[in-house]
Amino acid sequence: MLSRLPEDSILQHHIRMIRRASRPRLGLTTSALVIATALVSAQTRITPPSNKYSPSEDVKLGQDAAREMRQQLPILRDDEITSYVEGLGRRLVNAIPPELQHPEFHYTFEVVNVRDINASALPGGPTFVNRGMIETAASEGEIAGVMAHELSHVALRHGTAQASKAGKYEIGSVLGQIAGAVIGGGWGQVVSGASQFGFGAAFLRFSRDFEKQADLEGTHIMAAAGYDPRDMANVFRRIEKEGGSGGPQWLSDHPNPGNRVEYIEQEAQQLRVTNPVRDTRAFAQAQAHLKGLPKAPTTEEAVKKGGGRPTGTSGRNAPRPSSSVEGPSKSYKTYNEGNQFEIAVPSNWREQPNNDRVTFAPDGAYSSGNFSHGIQAGITRNESHDLRKATDELIQSLSQGNNLSRPGGFERLTIGGRQALRTIVTNTNQDGSREGIEIFTAQMPNGNVFYALGVAPENTFDSYRSVFDRVTSSVRFLED
Ligand SMILES: [Zn+2]
Image 1 (cartoon, rainbow, N blue to C red):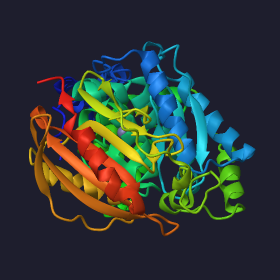
Image 2 (cartoon, rainbow, N blue to C red):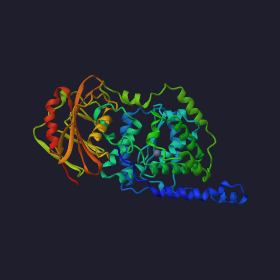
Image 3 (spheres, rainbow, N blue to C red):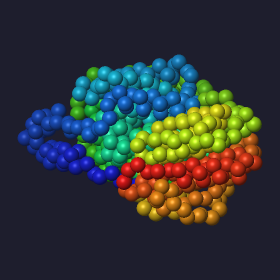
Image 4 (cartoon, rainbow, N blue to C red):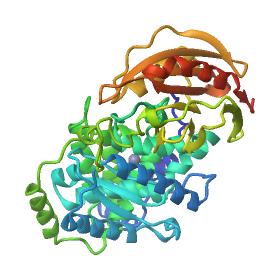
């Protein structure tokens, strides 16, 4: 598993300062009350973390991830609910302090018709709130609390900041995991699950210092928007209570940095709520309206059904049947992937970059990151420095939502001069058809792992294996 990102001491320093400054308020003497008044505006200052990406890159990446989310998840098309959430979101966005407003950003709000408690905001502004979040909130302030936290991640540009820290090849993975975090397990087709590889725990989450920043900035936004920031503490307390194993996905994406409720409440004491929201009839109406709609599925059920899209028997985005797919060409073409590696593939396979990975597939065999014939490759992080363990984790992540057979034996080889492993698994599609997947992994320096997944329908798999061998033996690493 990936190690945690280094703790950022800046924020903690601010928190310590506030703690010290606020201690006298605990007294009940007159002088303590005077100090309290003087401290009213002493909110924690939040400095956005350093970031190698431009705000317009946030926008581009966020839009790509949003598109993927809309494909995977059912969006609630209900004017009353959507305009309610939009109104709430707009109010919060207007309260983002000027120094964190990026003119490129465009905040949009959509409601996902699933009952799990979750919300997610993507870089540059696309924001998704689960119906379950609205249904279970005890007050409008609670929804505002979760949304203000999410919007703070966006305004502070945490997605790309995390990618900046993590290294050059990880940008897509961050987004893949953001989408994956909402989608959860259960990708319909085998190969699109690879983006979760190695991110199962730590990288799928924001670091603890980013979480703390989003909490604190979120309380500022809430107060400026007219909400009591203590409602953020309330909703997190409730989410934690419902947590535990299989608890709300929100918690595993936004881990408690420690003493979350306490520091939120402490920060809330420093804040003055301006123009407080008192009329929450719209909230009551929205909840009542949702009660009248057919019950929402869980995220997992929705994803299995194919999200908002009409589906065929083998799931959404299913490539066309194999009969229309041309066999691999005998001539090969070499590609340079992000100056990370070179790879040669049959010349009739098209290059399909998708965030952190690239897929090569013939016409008719690729759709939105899924493919029925071809090979997918990428470099990802897995700091176990144990290739067998990393490979097991890859298989584990692929088996989420797929019906994989247990792998056969592992064979040692080298790829690009690095120690490598290969093994074969079989996936049974929803329509009962089966496909073979040859999995290659190679240990890179610095905890990186190169992987390649060769996929072909079971009846042609054997003939494709020699192609996969030739492709992987062409791999040349360009760094280190
Ligand atoms: Zn968070």
